[in-house]
Length: 119
Image (cartoon, rainbow, N blue to C red; front, side):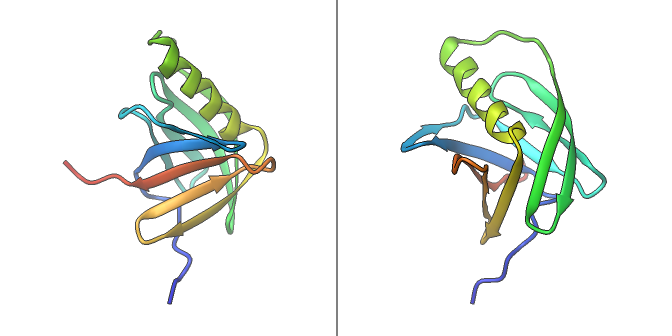
């Protein structure tokens, strides 16, 4: 039996994103944490970010995204732009189960997450 698990309060590794039918793997640095107190933070693939998060059940809205201004290779920057767009274009629907999670935006684009292992 599968029980919906919380997405908040967990350090997630971003495994990849799916935009339309194309799935792209994330750089190893990409990660995300959303806390119940309304804060989100992590790394978009190159730059660190912080943002405001509103959590209501399985719905998450992320806004006021602030990032560092480092430059990385074009592939990492393209991934970062796509991830930031998915996270901030509207309300996301969260699904978490067995150490994995998916955040889906209104267009059906998805962010694939897995629990970060300590270490």
